[in-house]
Length: 207
Image (cartoon, rainbow, N blue to C red; front, side):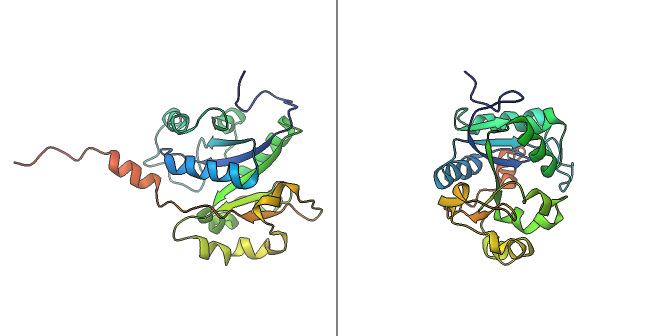
């Protein structure tokens, strides 16, 4: 039995967290975030959605999609944390379009978009971000150096009346836009940039 995203029209009732990213590469910090979201939000699964190409990130230095997907699979457990190539299969590079397609594909699932605090700061740069957050709840996790700025930023200000506690996020009813929460997870100062730097050869020995 597959524990992954499933086929079109999948009718299972599941609470699914969507953690998108370049995963260049995926690392244990991503797995930590996924597990924190599972616990705090009462989710059935978290999907590590590997982006075929982030419109806000330069292509230079980006590993091929297959390598990034493989790295996500290595840190996922394949049951509750699942690496997903669904954006590649849907032909989507924009989160608002991905969410719209997923809601049609999985009509009984309850999705939550999971972002790090650094992405909450950048959210106003995303295409159709306000429209997107009318329909899908948002969970924001701490990120070293960003959390305070994020909670005082434009997106948090626009969404301030829709903030809820993490434990009640998916039990909230709404009519004027989906709720959001800040998840009090432990911060981990592990960045994909640091992982890449550590994995590079250091050059020939001296002497």
